[in-house]
Image (tube, rainbow, N blue to C red):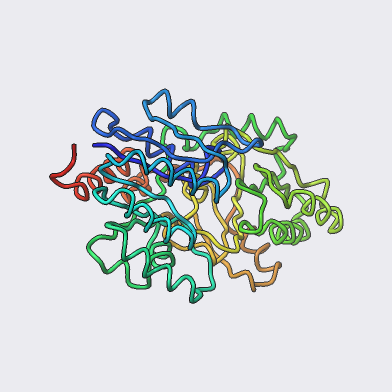
Length: 370
């Protein structure tokens, strides 16, 4: 079966791209011939291309610019019409007319659209996008029900051609690891009596990093043993540094930058913070649970990925003092427990999730698959 998968870019800091990499590395690539159409890796990130190419994925890398990617996709599909399935990862309204373009250029391909976002408020242009998606796509996936409804329509989950594709993670990487915990904490000078909160992701508007600094300042005011370790980069790093200095916590905020050994950092945390403005179903939330780390997220993060008792939610309207008190109560510190039996039973183990995707491909392609 020949599949064209379309994603954002090759950088592993993107949650969507980490999901794509995880999926492709666990598909049976002896049965599925996959072309990955994707933007080039951003200069500040490591690329997932080497691992994917080694596994047998053919990568078609184009400039990492939305308009340039659409133009390049148009040119590609004009001369490559033999795909059985086009699997399109989308988080935008512009994806709807792109879906129409794919239908015109590849009329025999089955189009699967895959939502990775909830980005309120709902607008009339989003409502129009729902209709366009539903007109041209054959099958709908969401990283959670909320993401499916937001991008494809309020009742999309009632249709037989919709299913949830869990943002599964690699159990062989994200698990409680006492040695990794000790090593990272020693590397950053975290003493045995100190408590470490952490964050992994882009330092951008979606992740609400300035709010994160204010939450952390309230945590320090309640318990001065807290430190904060931030893994990732982005345009709001400098404003975060300035706000931390203004609030008197700059000496307790550590910027680690982009890192490849994310599981080690997750294990070092006593608490994972995710006060996002909007999300789909964040991979990092599942990664943290895989490592046994208590999580405190905003209610703007959909509950789909809250698989274990580790995850707690508060609204962004809650006082910072309430965030601090909750953080204190849910993060006892010490060794992390193993929650993988619960995560695996919910479908968040990679091989299970990849097998379910193979079932979707076989069902959608039907007897016409090559």
